Length: 161
Image 1 (tube, rainbow, N blue to C red):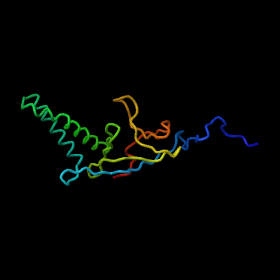
Image 2 (image 1 turned 90 degrees about the vertical axis):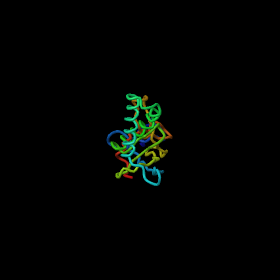
Image 3 (image 1 turned 135 degrees about the vertical axis):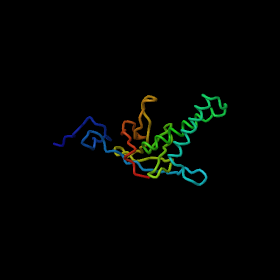
Image 4 (image 1 turned 60 degrees about the horizontal axis):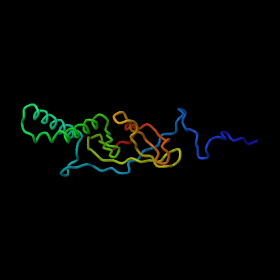
């Protein structure tokens, strides 16, 4: 007698592959690595943080001491530069607006990257996806063929640049 182990399961369904009850984590590969350079010199994460901090301090000084209105226009780019630089120093990886991955290598050089991989469950393509409510969301690795195939994203598991 040849009994089917799970007659209710869909034909393409695979049982989870790990002992923890989840599927094996997909391997992400950098398909594009674009170094960011200004004037022929690589942009450094420390420079981003320092320029952002100086711009924010100048904006605060302008508001407090009335130095002139033009400093006000530094607040948005300075805040953006400070945020990116600080996150790169702490984690080495920043995902911005669900579109752009910004990474820093061990020496501090900054790169734009694209990450992709293959789904270990259905062989579809996996990409990074921001899920959850705004402000409380998190980045996950998600299959483009089936959104139920989802894994927590940990940037420390990526290969070093």
